[in-house]
Each structure stands twice: as C-alpha cells, then as structure tokens.
Amino acid sequence: MKLGYVASIFVLALAGFAVASVRLPPHVAASPAPQRSAERDRQALVELENEWLKSEHDAAALERIFAPDFVHPVPTGDFLTKAQHIYYSTKYPPPANLKNRFENLRVRVYGDFAIVNGIVVASDEHGQDVDRTIFTDVFAYRGGRWQAVNAQENRVEKSPRRPQDE
Image (cartoon, rainbow, N blue to C red):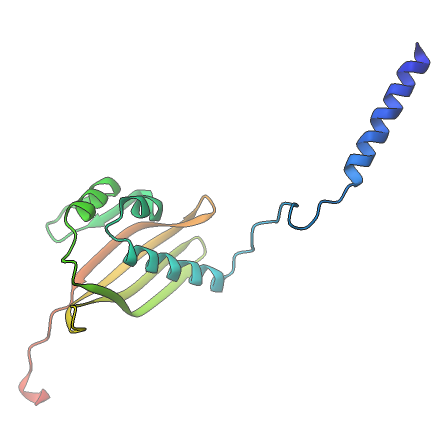
C-alpha cells in the first residue's frame, strides 16, 4: 500500500514538473500590459478625443468614454450627469451637413489625471467654417483606461473690431 502511495505521489510530482516546464508559444502566452508613459498616455488621450468627436451622438461610444461620475457643466447653470449628457447628445444631434475637426489640441498629463484643451471647428458642406467651440476635458486613468470625468466648452465669439486694429 505504501509503495502504491509513494508511486502515486512520484507520478503526480513528475507530471507537475512536466507541465511547469512547458513553454507556451509567444502568441499563446499572456503578454503583460504595456507600460504607461507620458507619450503613450498622450497618444491614448488624443485617440479618445478623436473617438469622442467622431461619435459624440453615439450612446454606446459615450458610455465607454465617460466615467460613471462624469459631469458636464452647461451655460444654463446645470451640471449634467453622464446619463443626462448621453440622452441630450443622442436626442438632439446637430445638422447632418456639419463636419467637426480639432484645432490647437493640447494634452497635459499629470499621472493618473489629464487635461485636454482645444477648439472644435464646425464646417458646412462647402467647407466653410460656421462655428468654433473652445473646450476643456478632464480625464482620469481608472481600471486600466482613460475615462472622461468632466467636460466644459464655450462658443468662440468673434471679437469686435477695435479702431486700433484697422
């Protein structure tokens, strides 16, 4: 009986050693998460801003981009929640003939927080610029990804011409 018990342990130990020494091919082995760097974070934030601009009226995309505690202060004095912002954005899309693009996009990363400033320029079907909005978006790195926690924008007004400018 003892011999059978010892033989069983020996076989199990040998099998464990054999399994432990097997190397998985590179495409099967789990790869570690890429190391974060300021440049990688900056690139990820620019990509996220581009996705947001492209999908600003797509509820599923906004659900991914916004953190659960996302807040959007608006000129009426209200603080829109994530759900309120998504509802408004999907219910009231802009005219289909307008195309948006970024101008002066600036990204500043502070560890697990980042601030993105820029201008969104809206152009009509003839390529004529019809509106400009300056914005600040705040992001937090949570759960292995960047999420928007705050967004605020203001329409860029044309400054009146002053006599000394002429």
